[in-house]
Length: 257
Image 1 (cartoon, rainbow, N blue to C red):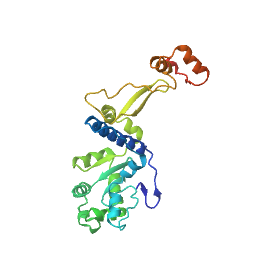
Image 2 (cartoon, one colour):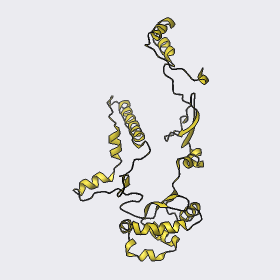
Image 3 (cartoon, rainbow, N blue to C red):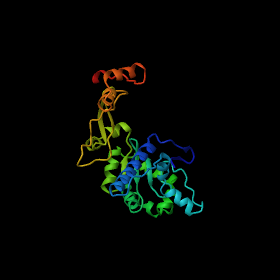
Image 4 (cartoon, rainbow, N blue to C red):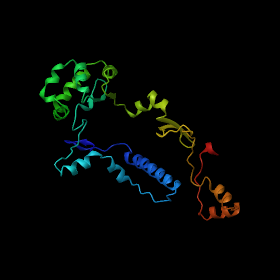
């Protein structure tokens, strides 16, 4: 359901399946641990990437099934297929997301200074506006682009509580003050790669340190510690395993030596 009906499907350049599957697995693991802690015993947990992807379809599967196939969703492109205006619009500086459905539509018409749109039969309700988005979209985009900046548009619509937001590039989002302050973007330091930004952990707790200074171990870095400390192997025994190629260690970066 990502793409344009005329052009075809798009590929989302984000690891949606990986992150969703990990989050679903976390929920399942926590539930299993609670079940065990309350006397229910242990159990296997089955979480796969495909199931988590498909779970995101929410209404589509049910609507197709309940309608006996009469309803068939189409690729929506930049706009919602069932209600409108709701989607991505070309603005003065780039693109914005604008949602002006239900009670927000009269407010948008008022801000635009186009009261005639309220009585236009092509835009009489949300489904009709969605069906006629090819007509409505240029009207809204021309109005958006008549302003000096997207900032002005967002301020004007925000004052009327009309849902609106800029579509930021990855770099713009990374440098946004809120993202930095809230920990949505986090700076980490790797012994080999140095300092760089990554997405912060979205789960935060009041009783734990949320940004632990964790370092990924290198291959074989803790061999002596594990074999010697846990298995009581001496240095000679470990050395023999190294000479035979059974134990392998990759070189550590200079900062770690």
